[in-house]
Amino acid sequence: MEDSLKDRFVGVLLATMVGDAIGMPVEGWDCLRMAEQLDKLRYLPRGEQELATAVLGLVTGGKVEPGQARYSDDTQMAIGIAQALVDDGEIIPEHLARHFAKNFQPWRGYGPGAYGVLDALKQGRPWDEPARQVFGGQGSYGNGAAMRVGPLGAFYWDADVAVIREATRLSSLPTHTHKHGIEGAVVVALAVAGALRQAMAGAEELDVAALLGFVRSGVTDEVYLKKLDQVEDFLAAEPEPCVVAARLGTDLAATLSVPAALFAFLSRWDSLPDCLLYAVSLGGDADTIAAMAGAMAGAFHGAAAIPENWLAALENGPQGRDFAVTLAGQLYARRQGNLGVG
Ligand code: AR6
Ligand code: MG
Image 1: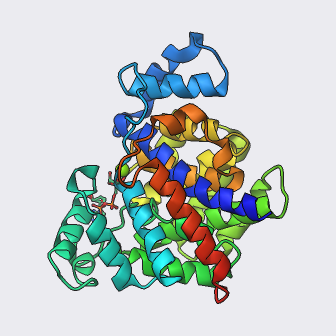
Image 2: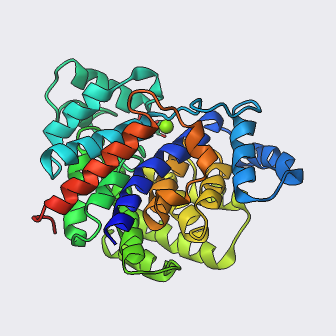
């Protein structure tokens, strides 16, 4: 029981990293181009692991060298959230902003707004100013708060919905203050927590309707509620991936990428590799959509479901694969020792 919860904490962070790393080389490809490339794999062995490796090879120029698959800002910021929770046992935005600034590596592919905010934080600006000032004072509605929130969803997996919402809101503030940026993060955090709850209750099959209901129970924004209805319709209708991509969106905006990640998980919950490949195949902001879907699938299945060869491909330097495993273990230990949550 304990071990299986720990494996799921690790799964959330590692599958975020894997999804991010396999999506990054094709970030910005449209769905049709993705379909054309993936079609080339039709004649390869059909086992999940072989297919997974083939896709990784395809997007990395035919070779999958151990340690060569790099992650991007998504994972780097998820690491910051995990570190802040390990340190404080809760989200204190000012401290979280410090973790983001300390970890900031400009070449990791940050969104333009987030790049400016983190640069300003690194230069010592007060934690709550730059994020409020971007985009003419509107704040960012990008998917940057959503893409990193997996570890928080794991940490608060059995907390009240209101507690998850508030912790998520606080975790968004250092970079994303627009309500759509924050609400997208709430959707991802709830999906991760809900998936983990079902797994820990012993579910072998995901109760998709219950998961959707759980997410809905914590969402107040009309735009997202409509998107959740659309996700539900698509689960019944199973349209072509490019129709899903066009209708749900695969954009940098949270409203136009979080629903696609949720759909990838809810329609492919039974296989973590399939879920990630499908998320990538939608195209657009593929790394982030796969990172978010990965957090959800990692919560349900645990790290043991990630193909060995994908893990081997991940970068493993400072803050790489092994670091992520250790950090997720610390997050788990902190959660187990932290009785005040929920
Ligand atoms: N008004 C107009 N455009 C906006 C607004 C707004 N209020 N908010 C966001 N955008 P950003 P992120 C658009 O830069 O959310 C990376 O690849 C604008 O075009 O805050 O941290 C990551 O890996 C802006 O540049 O970044 C993610 O995949 C964009 O949304 C992705 O970028 C993203 O917002 C988003 O990262
Ligand atoms: Mg990215």
